[in-house]
Image (cartoon, rainbow, N blue to C red; front, side, top):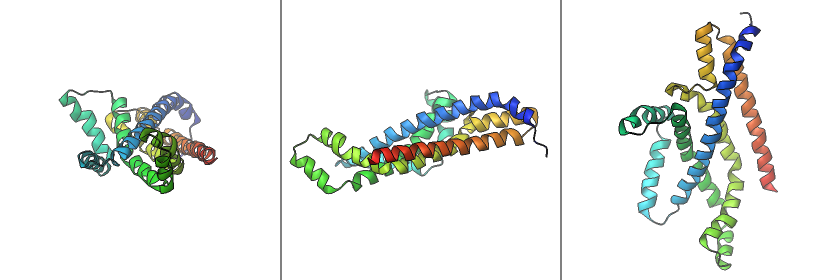
Length: 216
C-alpha cells in the first residue's frame, strides 16, 4: 500500500480541529475529575453515615459502570428530564465525573499516608480544621499522589475517542469522517496514532517535572 502525503496534507486541517477538541476534553475533564475527586474523598471522611453512605453508593455505581453507558445516559436520557447540553459539554462532564471516582481513591490513599504525627502537631498548635487541611494535610497528600493522578490523565486521554459515540468529533472522529469521505484510512489513522503517542509522552514529561518540583 502506497503512502499518500497529499492525503496527510488534506487531513491536517481536520486534525487540528480534532486535536483542539481532544485537548479541551482532556484539560477540562482533568480539572473536573481532580476537584470532584477531592470533594468525594473529603466527604468520605465525614463521621456521619448520612454523608458517607450516599457518596459511597454513587461513586461505586459510577466506577463500576462503563463510561460509554454513562455518556449515552447523559446525552440521550437526561434531555428527557429537561437537562440538555451540547455533545462536547456532555462528554467533558461525563469523562470528568467518571474519572473523579478513581481520583477519589488516589486522594484517600494520599491523605491516609500522611503521618499521624502531622495531625497531632496541628492539634497541638490549635490550628483550625480548615487551616489544618489547607496548610498541613493536603499539601503533603497531593505531593504523594501526583504520579497516580498523572496516570489517570493519560488514561483519560486514551478514552477521549469514546466520546465519538455521542457525536463529539475529537481526533479519531475527525479521522474516521475524513477516511469515509475520501476512502483513505491509513494516513489519517496513522497521524492520530502518532499524535496520541506524542501527547502522552509530553504529558508524562510535564508530570515528572511537576513531581520533581513538588518533591523539593
